[in-house]
Image 1: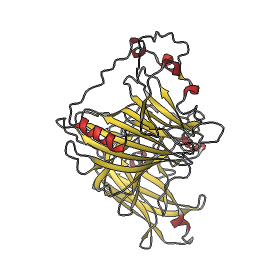
Image 2 (image 1 turned 90 degrees about the horizontal axis):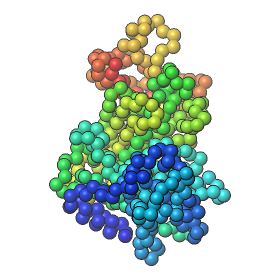
Image 3 (image 1 turned 90 degrees about the vertical axis):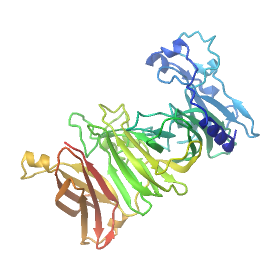
Image 4 (image 1 turned 135 degrees about the vertical axis):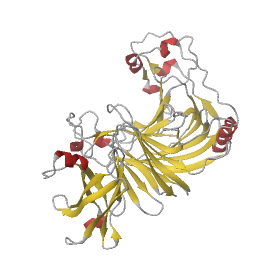
Length: 487
């Protein structure tokens, strides 16, 4: 199996009707409890490539409970041969479970994880995981898992309901003894699409996953309303812009904003929110330079969560390789009752869908970033806060005229003299009226602060706000683009 052969297989499958997975789990696995599944552990001494003392290793996940659809996993050998990696009971310690496994055969696996000495040579840390539908995620040095990526998103909102394509088969390329990267191939299948995927994972302080995708729409399948390429999935419950008074933690989120670098050179920052209803925002672009769900707040004091350690969770920055043409970045924000549910999705939607059976080809670099992360070249938003301090406005006026306090920092602002004439350029769409704006230096943090007060025309509708800093005729910051949600 190579890249072209995998592409041909995906294209051939796209000409055939979708066949749902016919493998049925044994009843003992289909009815397993959460605690029973947690008691099943992979025997690490059986890790793929461990006996050869290679820099990377692979371990496998057991099927059961939520993971009921098996994936087939193979090893690609240096001479081109394919070695199937079957399910083996001996690879797992089932703990206190007393399963009769005699009739199980080759069940397949629920997914796999890759290991590498990311934080020191004494131990191979968990580097990347592929498990569930087309989900995958990775870590850089010193990071903890947070947001996830996906291979493809179909009709996340609208249409006849979301479809979750899944990686049904994987090929792990055996690395060389001195390898600094590892390659994974995957076949994607769903009722309306197929795809060939290649992932080249290079670990480091910033682990990068170079993704190549060739996606085909199935002939004769239903129409696709929204084809989401390079999708990211995250969680936002609360932040400085949307506090939870009942929670002792100042913020709870895996990501706090969507950042976009447009093809024209403008940088956008959209603070994330937890809405009361499904909210979709679109940013029309031509040949974007990048987009990502970012975790800018990197201090423990932002979260005060000893267990979750949200300050260690990575940002995910997507850099297109080649021209992506016309399309849009779409941000979907969903209501959520708590932090256990992912409620944020962002992806690229190409302006034109391919004809059935014809490839839509896209390549990008996905960087899993920690404290050192992608920033706009001029300056950027460090925090967004909503509310008033002392004010002569009544409670009713404050509710109908919300105020935002936005801080900016970065080299373009640092280079300005103390008395530089910096102004805030702030606009609202037709449903908002900007009542007051102010820009001034904050000597405590050596940043610039902007305050803006706005009134809604129709309280039942959202308001789009935009703000950036200008020095003389030069733009010296990214653009803060915020959605004031309806009451």
